[in-house]
Image (cartoon, rainbow, N blue to C red; front, side, top):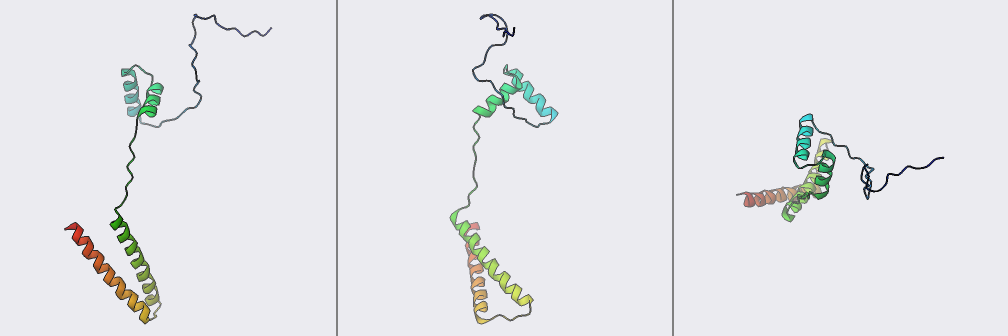
Length: 126
């Protein structure tokens, strides 16, 4: 007969837990870091697994997103536009082609835009 043996209530054995933990998380650390974690867990009366789980579940980490101010984003967009224009002009000149009137006008406009950007940057930096 296959009878399942159950310990009577109030007797030894491991206490039942409401939710059995079945998933593991592996943490890579140096031997020194491991010893520090173990010592900290022991100091507060926990095993390292419970200690790290409690830290992971209760510690709040503030995430700071780096956002650039709108004027800086606009300046970056202008610089990207100028760079694309200069790249097209350089490609044409490297082939030995001359610039037409429209390309010369774009080049002049880019030079003015760059001068304005430099002036704007100097005003904010100084």
